[in-house]
Image (tube, rainbow, N blue to C red):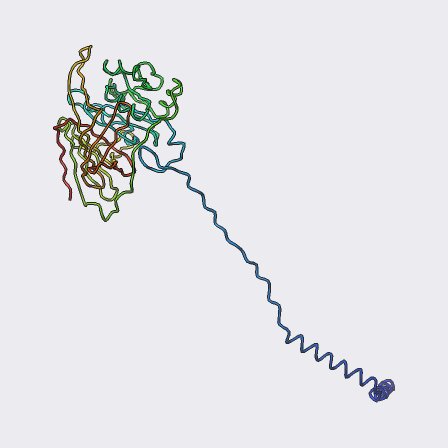
Length: 362
């Protein structure tokens, strides 16, 4: 208690001291100001990190292919065109690999039997055939694409011209390594090859690995609203067994191919062939014998004539022109402008002048 009374006495003296009161007053004022500033000063906002989102786009370096008009790597357009003679005797059906061809020529060999020349560049095929013998008109069509030509022998007229024409030739008779025979079928309807084997054969023969040709011109498919509901095309070669029927499919904008009353299907995939474009080329046909007395067909591949184009479900009148054996066939519309095809497979049916085509469309 004595200490407490002593502190109280000291405090009374201290508060009576004018200097103490002055210092205390200053401290109170300064403290008040500091407290005021602390509560009224603008608060610093947290720093926001700005994240810049960037998207990377891969440049599409693909180009339009020359045969089908589809987008491909530029290296594909530099590949060698392969032209393969494929037969169409009933015992050869169903064929293999025609669905992978970019362009298929169809015409009469002998006795009304049709035969194909299938051109490959964009697509590879693990089985092509049955491969059959060559004819002179196939030489002309293969030449205009600067193609390597694969076949199994041929009539003497065609074989005589392979050397003089400088055909890049792969004849199975002398290149059996690049072909095989399917034991489930009987000769001569059982010889097959692949695009890979034929490219290897071309390298072995030191043929050029590229082809020099212009290709076709292309446009975009007609919009669905502008396509007809249905259409049917029959090309008359020589009779029902060889006259193809094409039925238009509006959704896919293709022509479903049938032959001899049945869908024309691939042996390997089982899919029905469905080209985007069908061309009917009318030209001269004559028949005779080779120097070996073989029956032969002479087809006018050089010159000009009438053509019909089946595209977007419609029939369009036009013409074809081929200036010489090495020149590419040019297809034109009725106004003389070069015809533009839809991207996809094209079938070219070459028939005699005077033969007919039946077309019905809505």
